Length: 417
Image 1 (cartoon, rainbow, N blue to C red):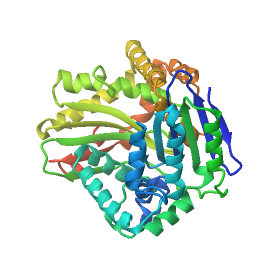
Image 2: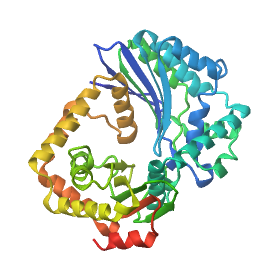
Image 3: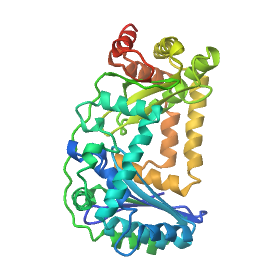
Image 4: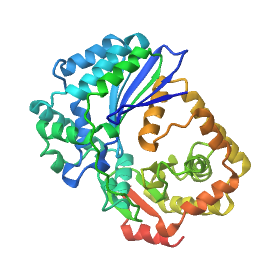
């Protein structure tokens, strides 16, 4: 069982004891990501994530790393379109130090201008790294196309033009304006003492309450985008409108994805790779945001097998939407998902992530028994109905990177289904 504490200023603290564990994981989750940025602010949340590791008023960047290494701990962070998270995992005896380091970073980072200039260069290299990864580039261009005209279309890392104007003082001001108490969830899971919770309450009670501005809505619009790149394989992602992360159908969608393209026994893997040998890699996935999302099918293959593979994938999708899964397929997918849920309970970091993500994005944390019950309630007919709902080729999108054809050719192929 987990406990939720809401401080007077709006900060939420969610905790879950794991009596048999010797470790604890703590995370500071903030409901601020790239979708909350204006066009000229693109990349701010991710830049701030980097800056919090560059030193505080009392610790240098090297000291932060050395202190965590000295106790065998791990500390890290990530930024998404919806949120930013700073987290650490240590032995329970070192939890007070981990909390102190994370809070020092969160409340007292220096935002030195020299550090900002250095880190801007690091982020530009990070952007270049993703540009060189065709799988990532394919996904990024897809999001930019299908969410065009909304903040969800912007890259998490930002763009060179927007990053150029961000100095240390500007980033500090942006953090002060957007990292507000009502957007903050502190998650703690594992072995801890009541004093550890009291310390978190004291640390985050100092924030002054103030309401956060509402974000702009996202929307999916069908699109085809192509990027010519001199690489050996063509990378393709076929997409359809998906679900928001609070949609009650998300458990059905997860099982659908597992059956269709979730592993070596999935339909697409068996048909496109194993039977026809048209590709090496193929899988499906759902990308969910607060108010929209998309369901994607990714593959990488040679130009000579591209059209046959796309036609095979489209035909498999249409057959699946008409007939639905077999009971055996559903049972395999269900057991896989339930196993993933139950095995994650063995990790204090996974438990912490579930607490933080659930409270921040959904406003609730489902107990394990309820999650299992949701999976058990999914039926073959429910999966078939979900497939019929999703796979409307009039709303299909495609992102292609490599030695690809023109946009009109791909659009014509999708329109012909």
